[in-house]
Image 1 (cartoon, helix red, strand yellow):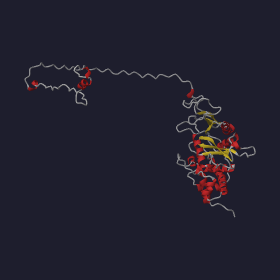
Image 2 (cartoon, rainbow, N blue to C red):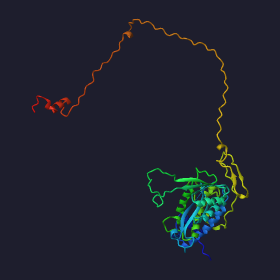
Image 3 (cartoon, rainbow, N blue to C red):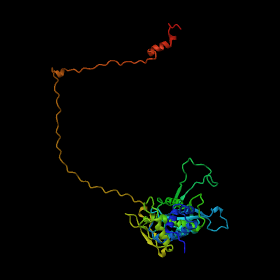
Image 4 (spheres, rainbow, N blue to C red):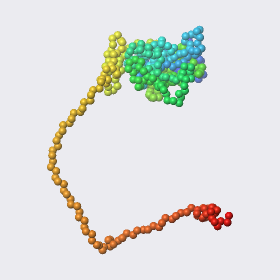
Amino acid sequence: MANHLPLEKRVDVVRHLVEGASVRATSRLTDVSIPTVLSTLLRMGAGCDSLHNAIVRDLDIRKIECDEIWSYVQKKQARVTDNDPVEFGDAYTFLGMARTKKLIISYIVGKRDEAATKLFTNDLRARLVTIPEVSTDGWQSYQTAVGQSFNGSVDHAVIQKNYSRKGRADGPKHDHRYEPPRDPFITKQVGHGAPDLKRASTSHIERANLTVRMHVRRFTRLCNGFSKKIENHRAAVSLHVAWYNFCRVHETLRVTPAMEAGITDRVWTVQELVERALAAEPCAVPEPKPLAPPAPPPGEAKPTARELPNGKGWLRVLQGGKSPQNDAPKAPTPPAAKPVVEAPVIAEEPAKVTPAPVAKPATASTSADALTVPTLRTFGAPHRWEQMDLFGGSRVETRARSFGDDDEDCPY
């Protein structure tokens, strides 16, 4: 008879793992052995992969941001020897997230090389049905992988961050800390298609990387909670992505990312996630479907596009080509002169002249009003104030006593 862990215990173990507890801390808090915690993690990771492949597909999402987050397995890359397995050392997690819906669309764990990047972009391409606008950093492998996976049906923006190298051997020799920046910190350029560079950004996916480090103990820096096996590392990432998409209510959206994307209608509980993951049938990655042009914003006309044969994408008319907006300006046409309408002549009557009033001759009056003369009030001269000293005399007397040498009658 097999010894199965009760469902309540499994839910308790998963709840601790997704909130950032380590394997040993989860074992102590749930009173479950460490091997049982790891076996539960592996089963949940496989089930969450199947759920993700079955639900997160055929997405009509336009704005996508991609980035990779660093961690390591068993030891850091600088300590890896030739006799160590290939899985040891750096382990990068590639994430592709919808900018506005916050849904993690694709994730891959591997090395930071062209092979892992190609797997990531292929998985991202297979889950979309609309030509996306992808924003990535300036790593060169993204340029090649995005172009090959989407075959030109993509608007790719490259955000290059120019970090200062002051203090290094190949850095600048002068200190410009108290001067304005000479070069912009962020440089945006077009990778493929016609992305909107004004709104291209990787800030949202960088914030999602912070969420991963806070909720997955294996990504916490400067601690001994790192992964010892690549299988456990991948299972932890799969569990976190499923919990983040379906169970965690986003503070900005006030719903889960899956609800915002329209692939579910309610918030999943951790118990529901555990039940669905353990009962999920194995599901492969969806097959790529043709990408349709994005829908125009409300109030704008549908853009001109034509699908190319053999699945080579779409031929689109983009802003910046030969269009009426870029033609040579025409000479301004003066406005048409308004017709002059003669006003009818109306005879005006001469203005009436009012005669000026005639002044009456002055006559002597003996009335009381005429004899009344206003009285003027007189004021005396202002008082002249003199400053007194401490001895009660005026200033003149004080000076006379102080400078008695000038007086001829002075006995001294």
